[in-house]
Image 1 (cartoon, rainbow, N blue to C red):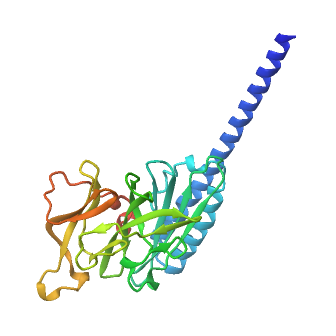
Image 2 (cartoon, rainbow, N blue to C red):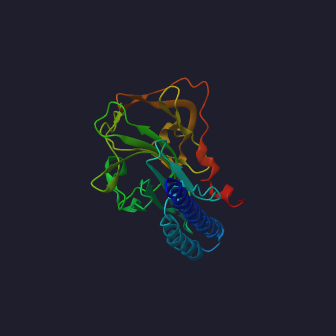
Image 3 (cartoon, rainbow, N blue to C red):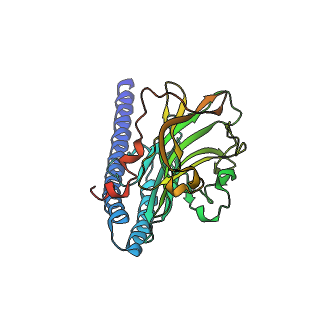
Amino acid sequence: MLRSVIVIFLFVCLSINAQAQHTSNSASQKLLSYQDTLKALSYKMINDSLEPQRYNASYQFIKTLVSALKVPYSFNFQFDSLKAISIQASSDKRFRIFSWHVMNADGSYRYYGTVQMNNPDGKLQMYPLVDYTSSFKNASDTVTTNDKWYGSQYYRIIPVINSVKTPYYILLGWKGNTAKSTKKVIDVLYFKDNKAYFGMPVFDGDKENPTKKRTIFEYDRRASMVLNFDPKTGTIIFDHLAPPDDKLKGRFELYGPDFSYDGYKLANGRWRLIEDIEVKNLPTDQDDNFNDPVKLRAN
């Protein structure tokens, strides 16, 4: 009798395991199929010569991505074939951010994205990101939500969870701006009341804007700016930007690196500005891997 019970128990366990494996394989096949479609659409978003076609590809991309993310436990699927967009996961695996851009005919950009949470039950929870860039009068001083987002394409997430009342994440982002200038952004992300919030007054030392909620850099589109995090020193390192002539101060579309570096150093959950820092090993700026529209045309 006991032997029969054991045999039945083992049979049931093997059946459940086989069913789970079949379900897992089926989900993987679905996600691989969605990935192929997304890859083709993302190529069109960057490479199509007509603006309406680029936007149409983006809209189709959004619909396909939502369908893919609805597949149970899709958070575990890497989408590593999608090179034309950014997919960044937090180191604690709490969430990941999909972000991308569509370039307009006049050289400006619109941004799209979503934050996908990593739910234990495998069900989809996400915060769609709606670009409201043009509506902000002073973006550096504004706390925004996912439905009124200061659009960027993110390439680094830095968790800040020690010695702070509200755990948050620093986001480093590329923000193509106009035909003349590019921007980069240091933003802050945290979650509250079933929304994703962006911006927090955690930056110290800026005399011109001591209460800013995010840091925004603007510079000549032809230039290249370093903005990245050095985990060894706990410092966000960036090029110091300056005009080519003092008479051109405030003409940010003419600014560029002056071969010196500034930084924000983390201390007690806040970021203190340090000017003219010595940099021995400059951290690699990952954004060039997927954000430069010219480079993307080869993918």
